Amino acid sequence: MKKPIITIKNLHKHFGELEVLKGINMEVRPAEIVVVIGSSGSGKSTLLRTINQLEEINEGEIWFDGEMVNKKQSYSKREKYLNKLRQHIGMVFQHFNLFPHLTALENITMAPKLLKKLSEKEALRIAERNLEKVGMLDWKDYYPSRLSGGQKQRIAIARALSMEPKVMLFDEATSALDPELVDEVNRVMKKLATENMTMIIVTHEMNFAKDVADRIVFMDEGVVVEEGTPEEIFSNPKNERTRTFLFNYLNRGAL
Amino acid sequence: MSLDFSIVPSFLDMLFEGAMWTFFLTVLSIIFSLIFGTFFAIMQLSRYRLFKFFTRFFVWIFMGTPLLLQVYLIYFGLVQIGLNLNAFTAGVIALSLHFSVYNSDIIRSGIFAVDKGHFEASRSLGLSHSQTMRKVVVPQALHMVMPALGNMMIALLKESSLISIIGVMELTLSAQRAISETFHPFEFYVTAAAIYYIFNLMLEWAIKNVEARSAKYR
Image (cartoon, rainbow over all chains, first blue to last red; front, side):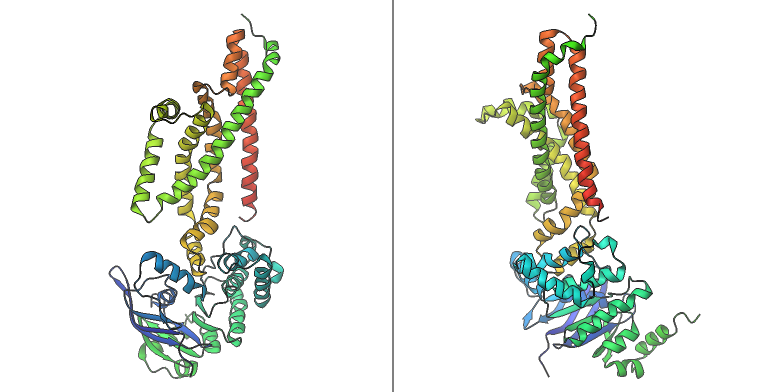
């Protein structure tokens, strides 16, 4: 088995009085697809955001590719380190967060040109390859305001991919989408999965989770309650809380 | 003495030259007031307390005192500490600084209005704080506050007439020269006002164009 690319040890995070993560332990290996499920407020988004340090943590350790990301250092050193770290960790957000003043293509080429000092031509080549991958090549000159939610999210995925990250984090990438647009984004994520991208996916789409995950992590109230293969979690959940969550999920809308 | 606009054309050369100086005075001051305004806005949002405090103090001084006094101080006052500026330079400095502090507050409010998610998305790609500011936040902020900045530019154009008091031969002073030769104040003040108005129409047109450019992505 390959060495983990991400290791999380005894991670604690609180916002003021509110403790959001209460001692998380987790490992992610290269090319593994980990799907984190759980109800709103269970801390799954926060967990994801601590990995690229959009959230600082209060206790514990996060290791990425053999280095501890939450090590103490001077402000300027740490900023430099984080900027480097984040180039290796792509992130896709619930609300897309495309830059509205740039076209789809410019959204994608900006970071590689600035940070990897790529030429216009080279950046364009990478961008077009990724636009092709997400099926948005024909839309490259559109401003985000002209695109549908699903299209925006696919551009956002292409933007993250263009830094050629080692890991991709998906923070409820389909939660803000109309139901009929969810599939086009999930299809892109599945495609990435077949290309051996390492991914951590936070989602509310259980069918998608079952389909794509190597491993499911179920979180509740800031702890990992249960983890296992999709079969283990969905067919034979051991923990009472997992069972309740899945039961409620399956029966939603049943009223 | 009755109104006689027929004397105006013989002074058009003079008024035209004055108008050119008003034009340069205004354009230079607008450019500098925007550059300094953006700079002060970013400084006020700096994480360094000293920068923040210093800029805030500076903004407070320039907002809280009359432009006229600032013009006098920069032109006459600075001579005493060995800074001998010509009148035009002093005028540009006074107008730029005076309007930059207003612009900085406008731009600051624009920065606050930019979605925090865009900031995070940019940082998650590996852009530094300052790269994020320059490439993502400030461009959006400027587009958002363009109408308000446009108003400040129009105000600046009109306030540039104040610079006549330190002897810059701009439009207002040119009109005054013509009046002192002809004793026809009404005709020349009206003509000068008309020229200011035409300048403002041009300025408004330019601002509209910039706004239209940002409208395409709304």
